[in-house]
Amino acid sequence: MVALSTLAFGLSSVAFALAIPTSSENTLEKRGDFNFLFGPDHPLAIARRNETLARRSNTNYNQDYTTGGTVQFSPRTNGFSVNWNTQNDFVVGVGWNPGSTAAITYSGTFSVSSGLGSLGVYGWTTNPLIEYYVMETNVGISGLGTVRGSVSSDGGTYTIYTNTRVNQPSIQGTSTFTQFISVRNGARSSGTVTLQNHFQAWAGLGMQLGTMNFQVIAVESWSGSGSASQSISNTGGGGTGTGTGTGNNPTTTPNNNNGGTCSALWGQCGGIGWTGPKCCSTGSCKSSNAYYSQCLN
Image (cartoon, rainbow, N blue to C red; front, side, top):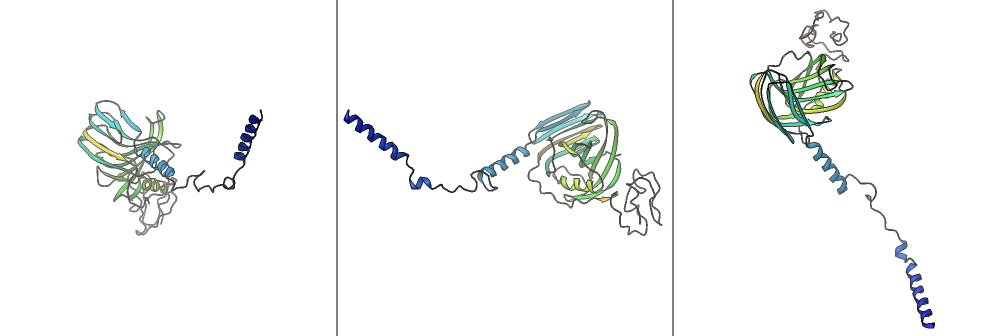
């Protein structure tokens, strides 16, 4: 019994000694900067950004609107091909939902054998409901609406149009909505579209987009035949341009330096789609429409 008691006492003494913290255990190690909040240079933060970019670079939306005829559309991740021979409307392409202001780089072929067709960025916004285009190639499509001005971007100049569509198909069913259209003067089938330049130019002309819906590189036609094959990315666009639109801006009074005749500066005073009084040498385009009343000396 004595031996057992001595053993028990000895074990309890060891346990007590182990329970006493040493001086080194009392000293808490200073936590690093990234223990709780990742800084921008933390490896996990970098990995997260890279994952986001990779996820964004991959397309996630196929636009496949066809109404008849022969339209052979083959979408793939980050690209598509299409062959068509039809007298019916179609818009097909690949992109993202929702869209963004990121520059889009596209490369490949686009050929219209007969009739008409277009290649470019195509998308929608809601609140307001807007259908928008940045046409990189336009073969034979006319009647795009009212010329509002122009914008320089990505080594070229684009003419800006607006058009109101009444009771037409939309992403919200049959609706009345506005189209915003930039058309490049000089066709191309490969390049970069710096969307921010167009969006800023449109806004400067009083053309406000809403909340982004889908956004694709698209081919459209409703008469004829042709083919296209495109690869698409929106992570590395090196586009250039000022993004400053020039034209009939309802919020800016133009500086008329053309001897009092502003129709040469502002196409809608006597230009395409203008049915009101023309600019005269003494002064102004008198109209109750605010868009046109800015044509003043």
